[in-house]
Image (cartoon, rainbow, N blue to C red):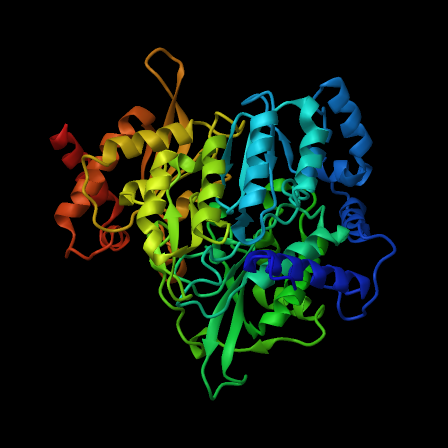
Length: 589
């Protein structure tokens, strides 16, 4: 392959070549590998599943009725006509537009939000500039980094739809299947391929799955959205245990039932907004088997997922209904050969996650190279900042930008001697590689400024919390505060050290006031834990003082200087924490 391509570009092209070769070879899709036969129509698996519910006397959801009546990928001429007239979609077409990554977000904004597919969270400088141009010419002049290491452009008018999609294609980008009942952006460790401690570089696996999804129609129109993530053992977590499928790299030592080496354990049915992490299938698979395993699981989900109740249409509820053993049997029946059963304790422990390693300068596995984690204010990038980041990535690195699930970004492949110059360049565009634990660990969903489901302006409140807490609480260890605007939990409030779920409460003048339920003690990976509720209906204006009190109490009462906030919370009951927070907050006031 030409040396004119960067390493990431080569991986991208290799992934595309593998997927196209697989499609030409007729690789069985949706996991139906046992027979090798393809159905007459890729969407038949979904129609057959819908038919079973109808035959049982149950009513399909509005969304499944819409998918059944009209193929979302046959909308192009309708979209072109609507764009020419300058009108937004109506009725169920609002849902079907999401198959193209276009979300009509009224009443929050009378505009479209465009969500990309950004496999592995990695984008090159040229593509980032293309996103900046789209945001400048057709959007609101900014983009948001999401909790799936992705980009969203907001405030797009109805007349720009076709131009935006064409610009994406011209730039080598896509938004296909980025919303609605589809497989969302494939994520992995943001430091994959450059991390000194990783067990395996998962980027080729993520790209292979990404291109397989793009080229297999039956992988669209699932019962509900679906999340998949890879974890290669790097220092920066991918949160794979919160996904519908989480592939976790492990090393198997000698003397086991498989040869010594690196394999993947398979976790299924994670959805922390519904109170669950992934459940281990009890098997190990070789890296080359990840694609087939994902297709097999998706095939079971397509057939078994609920088409009549959106609240129970995720993989979690299929696994609960069937039981883990029956579910695994159905998955294995779709594979050419069953995976090896191996208990988790027969594998070596994962290398530890380094919380906070997504911010600042860190050594890469490549000699003489650094990566730089850059903090973004509530995940927001202006057009000027996008262009500035692209320039920095090309001037000092390989032109590679890595987005993270923590809503920040990483510029990789920087020469060791260039750290000071990179810091200065970042400051010239109002960004920084240095940040307090509060600022570095702040995660917020879109909020009601751009999402009709949100009960509060989460991004504004996140920035207000940073401004209040930074000068008042001198934390010396990482802390994650997650603000989410509704029970959909896009910001995954249950896994934050502190999780905040938005709500509304009556105000003094009988007008609703934005407020939050407060949770504490969440974690992930080796420290996985769902946060416990501490307080309900706390007005947003009172939240900074309450959190200040809680964090001051932690610093004063922790067992030792090295005790984490999560460990501290686990040692105390919710009543003790409430008393501590209220007492210290009152004293500080």
